[in-house]
Length: 367
Ligand code: ADP
Ligand code: MN
Ligand code: MN
Ligand code: MN
Ligand code: MN
Image (cartoon, rainbow, N blue to C red; front, top):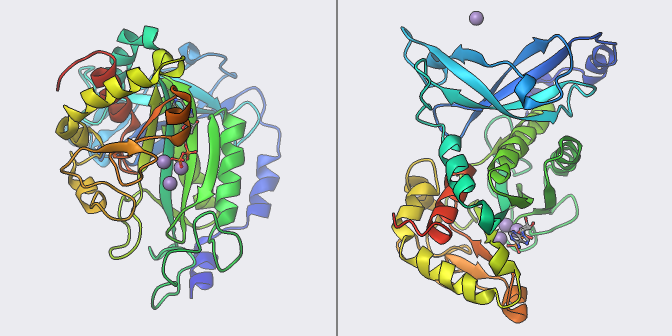
């Protein structure tokens, strides 16, 4: 059944590669990518450029039909695309580009799901702190019918235990997607730092970092685009839902590791505890920033079980995976390093998450 479905929707990639191998002349393809009205899904469309662009400044603004993406009404539907970052395209190769964009309304205001401009302002105000981030993107692979990839069609796999960092056909499902995505990240320059199979079978994680300032969220969004796009090539869906399967199965998060220059220097642990104190006073405000539904999505995930802390209570601890904030063992031992905020959900907007952390910890803005 599954195989038939995939065959039905699939096409012959060998035939495709004959066309992709043809010379393309002077002109090149730029795939413009943006966050749609949901604040979590990505859209993209392609534009021809007369020659290869060398900088973002050379990329033209563009627009799209916002009434089809939840970003405008039908009578006034044009939404502007403002290019903000450019990467080599690992799918079309050659001089072709991926272009990450911000979205602006007809009167040049940021759309309701454009949180990048605000993040950029906050990062600009905090440059002397040199804020570094490392984000751990968890996700679940689904078959084309929406069922977790590799799971029995009528039932469940054996209970959690053997799957985390597993190896073998009965332990991990969909590794081809993960391997392809990793290389796609390396090719584009997304600073991927690793990957692992997760506790729930068909769930995986990739990490991006450490990356400084606004680049963190730009790179994670492109990393997500690469994930959806590589999975598409295999007829597989990558879901960022924070609790895809009810019951005794782990949810998916986007742990955000954070440090400032002072935290990374000798004696930095003092700075880390001071940041934790500030975070403890802004817990509810941060929860509202940590998923696209102002905390509603995380209610399903932050239950106090399955390696999470309860959503309603702030907590921290050394090496504790049942806390809101974890201080890594090595950071505690060395007396400097970073902290891990375990609260952001897998479908969070990294612009909102990194902005909130820097605002609270570096700019001392009480929310
Ligand atoms: P975990 O043990 O929680 O699973 P991971 O190894 O998955 O941790 O992810 C840790 C992330 O933290 C990586 O992306 C790494 O690049 C990042 N990181 C390492 N050092 C720092 C630092 N000083 N500041 C911010 N992030 C860091
Ligand atoms: Mn049209
Ligand atoms: Mn991890
Ligand atoms: Mn994980
Ligand atoms: Mn983690």
